[in-house]
Image (cartoon, rainbow, N blue to C red; front, side, top):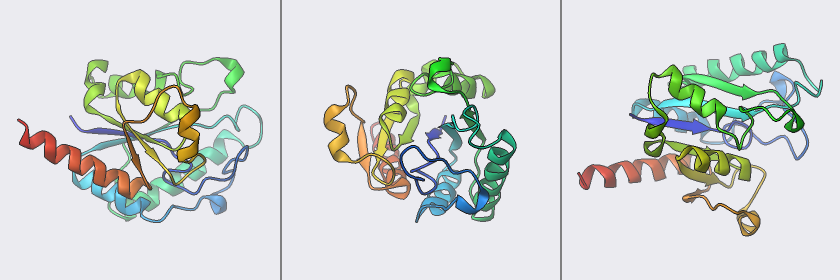
Length: 191
């Protein structure tokens, strides 16, 4: 079973800045190499899920309809580039709402496994790629192999403050795909 969970902002598209949100299609800009990375993951047979906190909806910064328009735009361009995203799973709640789908909690990851009719124990064979501590914690909490990318909000210095360290560090999503490819080929050799 090949599954990759990806954060969105700072992994697939340009991070909009601390405290800011991508609120319109015209503000959504793919990071260099992201579309190629998604195509490669698709060609390698991965089911790709986006797991992203988007509290701007609950805060009234933008509407759920706007979020859907941005998602449709993203999915259309990913398909056009030869990639496929199985599902974009958003937590639209504020942190103080304490919902189970807000990273670092794993409700969205659990829901993804349910949609594939797979038990959570399969998480140890999956990857979680993100650019902030809550991504790495969510992946860790679910039992995924975690990859921290340097293309978003946080950098290597941030790691000093983190209670949980990522399993791997990559420059960006395309570099993370190289890590995944290397790990898969090592795994195949060790069988």
